[in-house]
Length: 293
Image 1 (cartoon, one colour):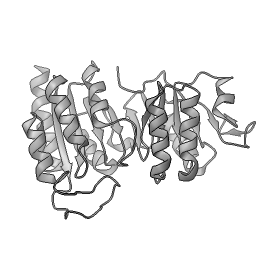
Image 2 (cartoon, one colour; image 1 turned 90 degrees about the horizontal axis):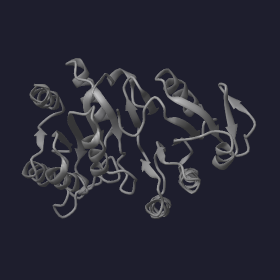
Image 3 (cartoon, rainbow, N blue to C red; image 1 turned 180 degrees about the vertical axis):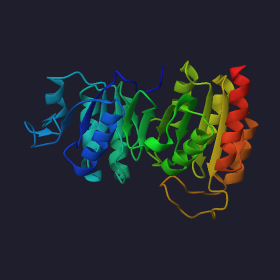
Image 4 (tube, one colour; image 1 turned 60 degrees about the horizontal axis):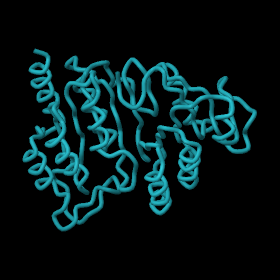
């Protein structure tokens, strides 16, 4: 078992005719991902690396069964692409596009809450279940099949932590990048709930950062409902207050979202907080060994 995707997931890529999307699609194919087709307006009837291209998602669904739509559309039209997948009833949507205007995402979020679809991203590196399937562009070099579920807001920090675990022989059940934008789909809490329900996940790693209260909301959920050990790392210990940094959500304001406040909250709710990305592996290893007895 894994979360969000597996080797049976049928994938449609919106924006597949783009150069970057094509390159990543070929890599996904090497990772067993079952890509069926692409969508690109005015390019229907063509092919990309053997995959048929349709003008719209609706036209594609007349020919194939799709479980997941991956959005590679440019920022100014990506929200419309997400809306198209929602309106056609696709269950899972993953958006890797960065820089979508917030007022567009507000419109998407409102419609998403009224639908049965779930959205990962935007600004997400995707999701991978090592050995089963991969959607997006998480590096293959960091992945090893295993029993640790990893969810991160920062792509690069998540990559590094997974790589450090891999060097110690600790693999992942699934790796999920939720993206750092303030308006997005799945949150830390949502993904941690999926890991709690996953039989192949024994330990959970949360890679957070300063700004916002997402990590705190996840911590309260973990204390009430999660039986598995959770290890967290919070980036931004030395960042100044009231200065926006990196991700749009990484803004400390009035003390809310600050490093100390966030770490204290997590510890108060029973989460094991690593002081560095290198300490994450040691903490995981200790709980992993205990859980395997």
